[in-house]
Length: 214
Length: 214
DNA sequence: TACAAAATTAAACAAACGTTTAACTTAAAC
DNA sequence: GTTTAAGTTAAACGTTTGTTTAATTTTGTA
Image (cartoon, rainbow over all chains, first blue to last red; front, side, top):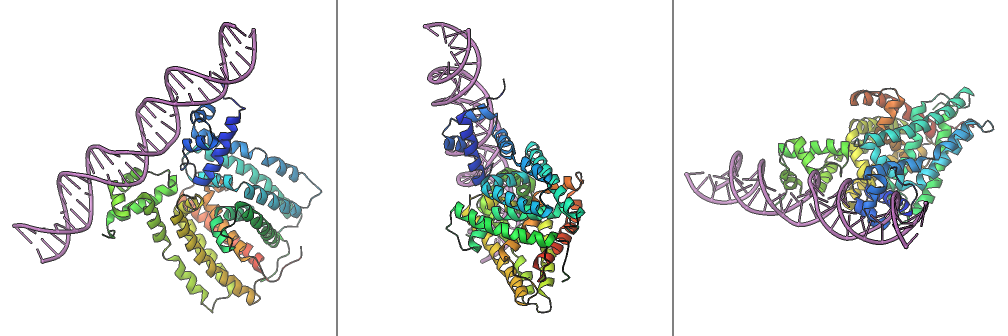
């Protein structure tokens, strides 16, 4: 017997789990928490997903499904300069990661624990594919002499790291920005503008072929 | 009665806990795991620390105790240019965070779960103090016209985020660097050089007062 | 209407969790 | 040597954990 695919309750469970994992971590969330929040009997978790861990696996696969298409489309777009592609990339990732802030917290958390090899490999695979595509854009820019030679892996680490820092240390930045009582939405809109502006400016200086002599 | 301060077993517990938390997360580590690894009776955890959570609190306080002195010393050093201070800062943080990779994973993990307000406030406080001092260096550079006007909070996010990215996504970068069987030490030395070189280069372009027109 | 499969439920399961207890040993102070 | 407190232990505490069971309801099909 294969697993059933379409039910309201199944989606409710995924949604409730997503919010709870982001809030309290994977281990910190019990299946009873999830069932209660989704207003579904707790036995349904094993029924639909097999186990709590498999539920997380489905969650990750499902939420990551679409993100590669845009990248691949951009790679083969000859009307955009490499720099325009980078700008577009920054906007895309800031919106995507900031918008799904809670969910990306789960992934960052789970990726650091060597508990489930399956989940780590799953995430690594997804990140690798994204990474290779972006590397192509950077290399294209170098080839066309629009970018200088930079360390592509570390440059990616800076782009992703900056965004991750902004979502992982929300507490810190709320205090730094004097917006401690702010809602999730307020934080996101404020942080979105600031992140995009900063990242574009920094990446432009970093990638620019003409370098000043300091 | 106040808590006892000096015992071998107490230190063993802290060390064992540090390694296990980093490996399996806070919730993923049981007090029995800790006691077994430290070769100490599990009742000693409550005896020395009161609870598992208080143990984590002690761990964080203890491991962060010394890091502010160097920063304060640098702020008031007039023989160094702002840029030299930034270079020194990069080297310091890369060494510190990369060296205590496992421990910083705990903090990043725990900081994202809103389980214990006490621990979050503790970490936020430490980060805030570090942050304010670094902001002074950046502002000094702007004042002396050696740096251009940048977003200091986001610039910090990029510095810290880049390093965090390198320690949190070790799995990914091991594969990207084709060093999948590498030991922790090999990874750290390789990543250390690469991180420092990249961060100095990127920050120099980013902060430089003379900007190219791309 | 009758029947089989799928969905759903409350209850129970054993295992693991963090913490506490009470008895015991060691060390220090007088 | 006696006394007092600190250190240490094995056992038990009551919860909570993820998962399974077996009974029941709902659904779709013939």
